Amino acid sequence: MTRSPVVRACALWLALTACAAVASHARYRIEPIALPSDALASWSLRYLREGGDDGAERWEGPGPNVITAWRSGVIAAQYVGDGDLVHDVRRAREAFADERARTGAAGSWAASPIAYTVEVGLGSGPVHVAVPYLRELSLVPLHEGLTATIDLDGERERRVLSPEMLRGAAAYDGGIATPIPDLGLGTDVRGLVGRMARDLGLRADTLFEEGIIERYRSHTISAETYPRDEAVNAETLAAAVRDAAAFLLRHQSADGKYTYVYDARTGGPRAAGYNLPRHSGTTYFVAQVYRVFHTADARRGSQRALRFLERNHLRNCGDELCIADEGGRVDVGSAALTVVAAAEVLMGGEDALARRLVDGLSGFLRAQQREDGELMHEFDLTTGEPIDVQHLYYSGEAAFALLRAYRATGDPRNLEAVSRLMVHLTGASWDFFGSRYYYGEEHWTCIAAGEAIGLETPEGEPADLASGALDFCQRWYEWNEHLQFRAGQTPWPVEGGYGVGPVVVPRLTPVGSRSEAFIGTYLMMQDAGVDTAGVRALVERGLGQLLRYRWAPGPTHLFADPAGARGGVPGSPTDLTSRNDFTQHAGSSWIRWYEVLQGEAQPAGEESAP
View 1 (cartoon, rainbow, N blue to C red):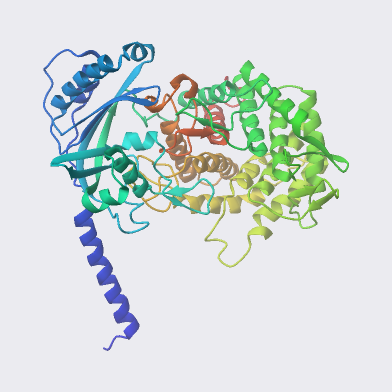
View 2 (view 1 turned 135 degrees about the horizontal axis):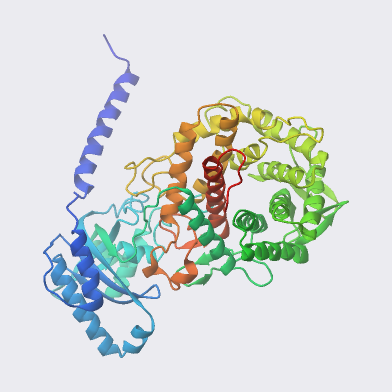
């Protein structure tokens, strides 16, 4: 049989690809070796702090071993050894003592606690230094750093940038810009080599051409285990929720405004614009904490946050209230999440401002609705007319807001509006060729659908909104089930995260928001008598990842103020910042599942205790 040229070309392409993959694997793979024992790891940290016995077992690897003394997230001193761990730890302690004596910094070292890390080198390999994009993707974040070696005046000089140094410098996930907000890929290898070259008094090109640039793999020994495993149960979820709320309230100003981006490296806010929808989303979580746990600080914090909006951003849009940002832009997202937050405050007890916001802003949402059920997402204050554009998330947020408003006030106009909107979101708006094989970020839609369970009309009849959305949200859950990482599928312990391969470190924020949605889906499936084992496992894997990576207390050697950072949730395992919605989405998913677990643990007819 004669094969066509296309078949022969494909076969050749596959053969060449396979050969290239095998060759690349053989050249660039760093073979794993045994790690130091737990006893030796404990001895290393203890000896750096206290000195003492010489009875440690030996461990020798290929090096380099990088031993660092950190003070408030900054390197106070560092020793780079060759591979004999016991020898290197002893020499490091001596070098640190000499450094304190030489610089006269003993007082400042004593004033601020010193945290030690020991990064044991496990092997090295080449870097694709000449190939753009491959170069930036050469390093495995959190596991690999860079070394540069060069002969200068007859002396062999080496510089090392260890994984902990790169994480502390926020060097991972920023080498390749992408059009997706908050998503960067890879590491700026050329920039890092330039940094090592400057330290050697060289030009970067000289180090590239005459030196040896290698990536090296290491394992970090530190006092704080991060990420740390925590079981998903009511006790751990409650602790995480309380820590998260305390973190947000700790960084809320007296006028009610939250720190938008907290930078653990500096212990304070990072310069960034302020996002009103995320302000209101954060307020929703804080109000949830009061309703469930009766935490007085959370009640006061949520009320402060609403007053901030009233004083600074509440406007009149025709006959209704609306929310405008500092530039005068009015959108549905800000109004919708303010309704969600205010309704949650009302569920914790009567509040005049919260009621005014729920009534006034839900009227604005209704006024933005088109005949087909969709909303117009902006409003022009100058002309007094809606602007018929659509943005990601806003319609789902509005559906959730109208449902919350209906529960809080019983206004039938909100039920009628959300009924038409939900039909649009779960039907007409997602009806095209291939729509069952691709989905966008639908978390707010399915959070809203979960909220509709058990909803009744003013006449006491079932509103039946959840059953109409069940098929859509169940398909979205099943689609995401294929995207959720299992243990061992990536270089990092990120079971429960979402992604499509082992190259990009999974982000944590989608885990929080999707988990909220899948909890709603779980409740809808349970209400409909559908098997929930799969979605329950999906939810708990996701919540487990969030528990592992929350700052409890986190990689404290890299923090300027570990106590101030406690409870925050970063954007990813490589991130040392926490934006307020990172913590909010994680916290809202934890508290919703806590409520589910508490409800399941209580006999029928009894009320669960916080």
